[in-house]
Image (cartoon, rainbow, N blue to C red; front, side, top):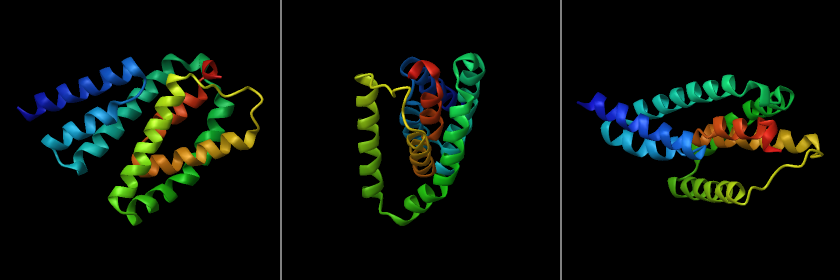
Length: 155
């Protein structure tokens, strides 16, 4: 019976992601942890989010700036260890507060449709990639942030 609930939760989480563009982990993780341990829920959601991101990439490959993507991915990989260190060495309330601030800021950017100008200095892309790596290491949010910033239509 647990497998039915897991499938239902995953379906609902990715329905929310496909509708709003994010939120799969926000919905799926807390509900999955009720049924399975965090050690199972976190990798499951990460793996499924990767599959979803790859499907979106394949579908929208003509709209992706791969030159920009590599800048973001390489700098994100440099930030991931720092995010893991941050997660391991800070108390839970600070980690939760930083996550809340990030989610609120990201939601406001999306709501008010703030766009990156095409003449943005290249260092900004490396900075955004590095920050997304830190957040990815700490909160597993790297996939959506990189996906959003590499879409040509986003600019």
